[in-house]
Image (cartoon, rainbow, N blue to C red):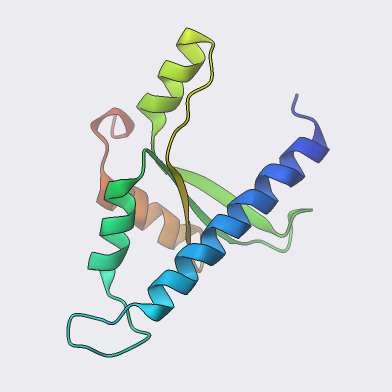
Amino acid sequence: MPNPHETDDFDRRLVFLAEGVRQHLKDSPSRDGRAGYADFAAVQEIVDDAEIVFGIWFDFSKPSLIDKMICKGIPVLRKIIQHGRSHDARIVAIPCTCVEQAEALRLHIAEPDRLN
């Protein structure tokens, strides 16, 4: 069972990563040039560049006030577990408004390993 303090630290790191993504998207113009309105192409670029992608959203029923979903990277995580050693993976956290938006992101990424 995970140590609650380690879980809190991990959640804090994900929030930090998601805030960086949120700020990047806010500062990125959309394809039609509107500042602060980055479109999904910007999100797709971020996702494509990462090995592991979490969707995170506020959930006030959780002690950390967030919940999360792995949207990309299950094969990478399986390999890490299988080999029993760490791996410097490129991890990002995409801020989502709700679990449904994180699920839509996961389905859009559509890793073959996750669709079974």
